[in-house]
Image (cartoon, rainbow, N blue to C red; front, side, top):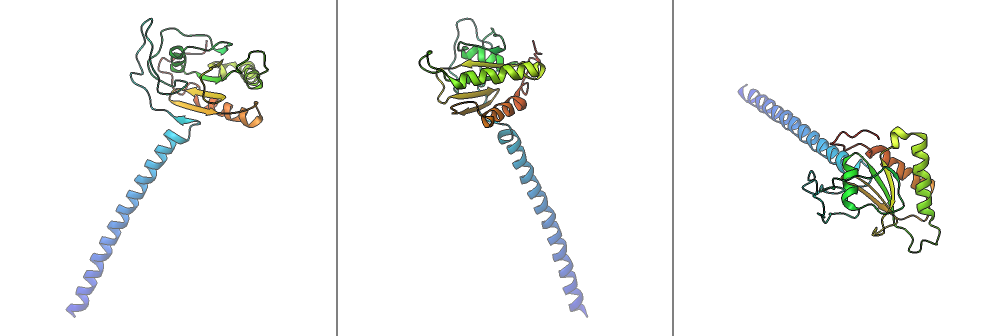
Length: 200
């Protein structure tokens, strides 16, 4: 009679251990799942790619100081005390001012201009039309957008927000390109705004 009781006790002990390992395994799987979700949310759920925040990111440059940024165009780092107007620009904006505009919650939509200003540039004209239309239809939602040329771009279009960059080529502003730009704007305007800057 003692033998079956011993076997039953062994079975019960094994069953308890199995339950414990099952609980621990479930908790480990949940932790891995949450970690994966957090990485996805931080790095991949937002449009564009994450660019490491350049330090010191809260340093305002003195007059005449310049800095080398870790991306082209810049997405973070030391910034100029000066700012510029939101909206459409026909001249490139200095990197240090771009970074300040990003700190204010802005998004920059920049394009590599044609080498000859005589040639038509459907991308430049299309971007100006698109951003002009968005700002006219919903100024409050799109007040913090800048369109400007940036001759040093490695691709035709660059979208920048604080710590995010989307670089791509396009021959014109198609509906697909427009959706890509609008998604970037909608997700990242005011996503980072430590100065709590309102719309102008």
